[in-house]
Amino acid sequence: MNSHLYLLPALCLLLFPTMVVHASKRASWWQHAVFYEIYPRSFKDSNGDGIGDLNGITLKLDYLASLGVDAIWITPFYPSPQVDFGYDVSDFENIDPQFGTLADFDRLVAEAHKRRIRIIVDYVLNHTSDQHPFFVASRSSRTSPYRDWYIWRDGKDNGPPNNWSSSFGPTAWTLDPKTNQYYYHRFYAEQPDLNWHNPEVEKRMFQTVRFWLDRGVDGFRLDAVNYLFEDPQLRDNPVLPELRPGSKTEHLQELKYNRDLPELHEVMMRLRKFTDNYDPNRVLIGEAYVPQWEVLMQYYGPNNNELQLPFNFFLVMGKVRTSLDAAAFRSVIDDSEKALKGRWTTYVLSNHDIPRAYDRYGDGRNNDTIAKLLATMLLTLRGSPFLYYGEEIGMVTTEPKTIEDVRDPVGKRYWPANKGRDGERTPMQWDQTRHAGFTTGEPWLKVPASASERNVATAGNDPNSILNFYRSLIRLRRNSSALLDGDYVSVGDDPHIFAYRRKSSSQVMLVALNMSNEKRTFAANGRIVLSNISSRKNEVVTEQLELEAFEAVILESKPQKGTKSQKEP
Ligand code: GLC
Image (cartoon, rainbow, N blue to C red; front, side, top):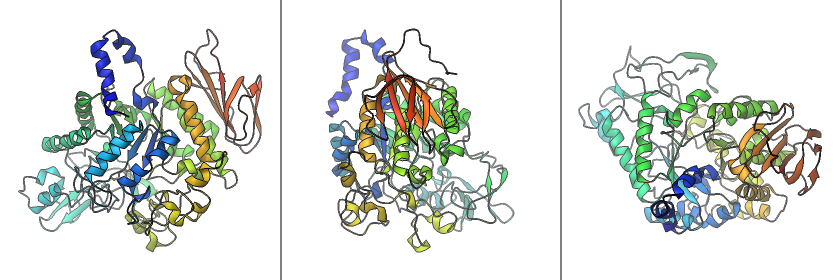
């Protein structure tokens, strides 16, 4: 898109102040957007080194435009020793040579904008790499001016300062022999946590936000944002009875003293003010896996003045994470709607930390139909959907077969109970050529065997492919006021069919998802606009909707005068 188009809203406000009322009612771009997550290492390699790169993403922008996505979130591409594959950043304001250069980044932004695709970058605020100059200085001596940029403490009883564990291992503390103190790391030892109690840290980290805003990014996905602060008294976390998968001795903990601490909301408010002052169209998306909705709601801020989009991970937690259970889905979504009170949310089924939805829910026989049913749900709920690369072609989680093949360090540490996250990060499958067209070199992770029949080229030619289903669905969504902006109400309490109505002033869409392996009927009226089974388009349903096993149907009707949006019996 011509970058000047971004100036239009401001210009309109100047020229047509009467439009303000109308404009303020309109949804923000990120409320209508379909987001697509790219793990750049695995998307497309343009230079044959076996690792995907920024130029590779640029090469595939036409594909992304043809899919119909509005924004891409790219996981970290900054200089990094790659212990946590980019989430250990050693320079926040540059590009790792593996991924390209700043000039490549600028070209990617310009080319994406030309195609009306926005760019979201990942920003890791919680920690740096242990190779970052801030940490190198911090660990050099107890009197370094950077010492207080990280969390250093003396040990206790010949051990670490408290019982906190890391996401990836038994302890969150590492003793640094040079100064004989421990530093805190919520993640790998190579990812020391920044000390956000120190105002210098905030000042410097906000400068980086400006650096990327100036380069034209449309928003940030804030990594692990609920871990910014720790209890200054370092109280021990309560220990839970469950063991960590893969360990016979390590117990899980309730993260009472090192997650979701109130101080972080002050930072989020200041950050929002900072980005809003720059341009209120830039969006803040936050990664916060939290146990309850009440906690997640805090991330919107008391006056909706924190994150516009705290990630809603409730579809990848609890019962609905693995089981296609209509009643459970209805209850999670109804609870979400109740908690949200009209605020906007996100929906996610897969990402680079979670095994892919295709095989989490697949029954081994109807996997493609189930994948299309899940797509229908993801793209028709009230919120912004986040797709994960490869989800649109039904890529499967492909775990490493031997410990020697494992790249994610946590998979080595807890093998075989936890094989790490390589399985959901395998290279994108483009075509039937060697290494699925991902690279001309040796791919950093093996390409799954399924790539020969499951790839973009083959799927593109098959009218019934998952890929073409996504395309139709995204097109339908884009042109539907009910799906974009309508309210949500669940319909009925069928144990096998999760159904809901989305309603705008001019359109009603009923979505009926048969989550069982049997034919079912459901009371409904309307015209079928999409089904995942056969081409039932335009079929008119008068009383009973017949659904095949795992069928997902969208029915359109006109709103009846006087219909109230409320939960149906
Ligand atoms: C987030 C990322 C994950 C990473 C961790 C530490 O959870 O999604 O991939 O390992 O933060 O940065």
